[in-house]
Image (cartoon, one colour):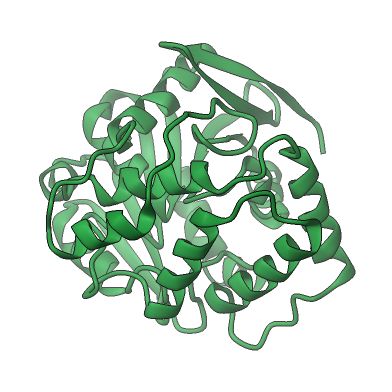
Length: 301
């Protein structure tokens, strides 16, 4: 699979990107979720876009992968306490800043307009991109996300929250610790009953671990999570989105409940919603197969 890599930079923040496909193809900016590196985008999704004459552009959000890391060491336990009691939370940067990272990347690549596809936290960032920069957007695809600040009512299950807190406190984990954590995490938020303990999964986990071998603490993850918890709801922003929007959500999503997308479907004027019964929070190949035809039509409209 051919691609070009590099950095875009603004205000001292360097964003590492990977640009697939021919430059003359229609660009699709993919915005990933909490703690994810650009290499966590599934190959079957990238290949699907390439096979349909699109130009996928992926990037490491700030505080993940090879992009700029910040310095503060937030306490997620303290943050969650303030979050549950609806007290203000201070964050080193905001989701608005992360949205600007995406736009500055398009500027760096000389791209005037692109399709935007965001998942989870990346969907939150993408909502801001589509609301704030409507002239830069062709279509919007929003997967497993929310316009409201996550809460006990619409957000993660207790088990998911516990794993998030534990990850944000982990310092210098071993390769085996990371692998066991990934097995548990993907088993929790991925398709139920799917066998993931495979040589390919282990190889990918090792490669992803080695890609950021110089960054072994969870503080980047904690800072991104703090940015989410400190954000205000985006209901007014989402209502202002003019781009044709396709929403996709798993019926049994344990990270962000499906009601979030049902609510956004009502808020966004030109939107359609696909709810997938056996999808949780990830885009496995079996899940993509259930919406790829509608996604192709959506991106081609």
